[in-house]
Amino acid sequence: MLDTSRRTAFDESHEAFREQVRKFFQKELVPQLDRFEAEGIVDRAFWRKCGEAGILCPNVPEAYGGLGLDFGYNSVIDEELAYLGSSAGITLQNDITAEYFVAYGSDEQKAKYLPKMISGECITAIAMTEPGAGSDLQGIRTTARRDGNHYVINGSKTYITNGQNADVVIVVAKTDPDKGAKGTSLILVDADTPGFSRGRNLDKIGQNSADTSELFFEDCRVPITNCLGEENKGFIYLMSQLPQERLSIACSAMGGAQRAFDEAVRFTKERKAFGKTVFDFQNTRFVLADLKAKLQAGWAHLDWALKRHMAGKLDPYEGAAAKLYSTELQWEVVDACLQLHGGAGYMNEYPIARLWRDARVQRIYGGTSEIMKELIGRSL
Image (cartoon, rainbow, N blue to C red):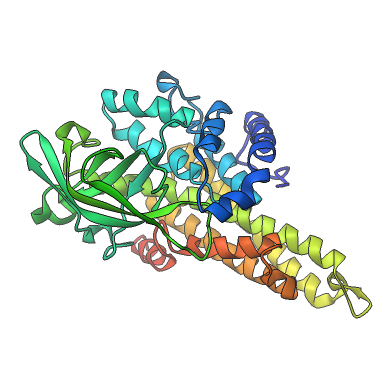
């Protein structure tokens, strides 16, 4: 269990919510973790149970059925989910797609989608990455051409979280290709729209329970009213929301790192070698001591970033720094902790194996570590 006794970003209400989240996950998620991993997808029944428990989109305004809470409640869910070793895509819906609807959606779009997103009836995805465009969002080639009162969308996306489950996708497309990034828009595509199709559920090295897919658009026609926000403002919207997305990843990174550390402490205290426990060796204690000091700094940094964000002050450079530091720390921790498990760490029956696999992509999605350094460098 995560020790939050020294945290500074949360108040009593956040901690009471955390207890509810923990109880819910223990009952509804933990018994199904292995099944979700094996099947490569989190079933829709779990999404609906999350909705019933108030685990979905807690910061959506009450006018649309949400709880109207601050991002601290989202971060509680992120941390607890990661600590359990789950890669369920509810964090994407809570922290990313819901925010786009709240910030940029029309009254009709909000009324149509948000209540069902909160209940778990509507699962969402955001389609940014393409086969030829990853961290460089200016390089996307998917187009949405006007034809009367419709857009005709053509292109493909890949590595899309919730891609198999999604009922509606926020598609990043060029509505004016001649304007480059300034010609990008966000277009809503319902899954039953003719011309929209899903590819395979991609075979990944980790985060197996997160359905991650290819998406295809072939003369896919949607009404002009499906534009989320203003036409050609998509790139600005994306840049505005990235600090929260990256903070969300940082929350998950710290939760996963802490679980790996706790597993290593437990394992080394139980494992015997040369007549004593592995923990009794000075090298083991030194490795763990070093990791504990770094985790202490990581949690303090995360709390600082969370408080900045909840006050509306976290800028893109600080968001990038939070993601960079937390995900790089996560990888250092999980790798060292797997090593402390010895051969057992390479066995899937031990939690550390999943934690190690799932951590690797954290330094890639949401903007690679290299891109984070480039962004931070621009602030110097």
